[in-house]
Image 1 (cartoon, rainbow, N blue to C red):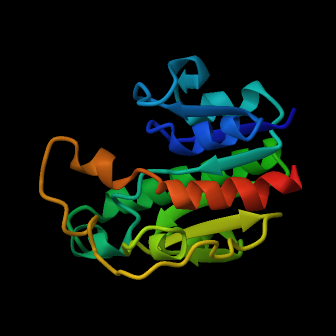
Image 2: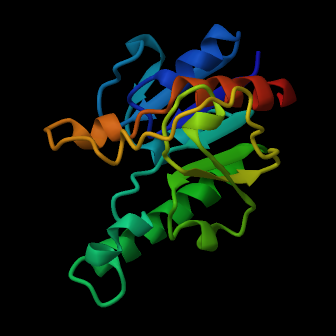
Length: 193
């Protein structure tokens, strides 16, 4: 049975989708999962990766300092630029570690500064290409994986995530993988394992 690790995922959406398709799939995050705790490693992803030899690792590192939408705070010469530099360094180390332990790796982020540092092809997806009438352009740096092909395009271009009201769980809620994108990942990348 192919082993899949979904790093920096507390929602459990993608790891659960892989398990439903018959994979030995684990999530890992510092926070407790909203998914099945029996399949969640609550620890630093850097510690979880070397635990196994993985067939596929998909990473969802924190985008706060990396997303271009945060340039007014994290851009060059801005107050928190040092946090962006730290986030870039950590994420590059994470990418390199994952590539040592898996032949197929993807790293997800919105439109982000990180992709130019990973030296990997990048594909972008939208929720409206996978059954959700919403916009949230999301990139995947890829190693030995093909671009995701839209499987269920629908009408609608609501910016629900961008317009989400402030709340204590806003950051967490904005980062959840859309089920349609998760299903596309499982159906298109799972067959390669």
